[in-house]
Image (tube, rainbow, N blue to C red; front, side, top):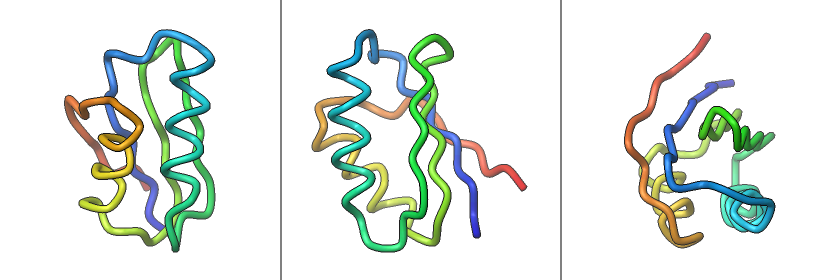
Length: 71
């Protein structure tokens, strides 16, 4: 499975975290979503397309500043 780490600098609170987890976690082919508010990063494991994950983060009300693929 692919692990992608998205930089989402505007996340500040538990509501931000919940919104992103709901939107991204609802995508087909997403195994796990982990939101780190302190680091301002969203880690997604699964086979969902990058474009779909970015769109879900956007639907939650946030912009992606960057992304790296780990592992």
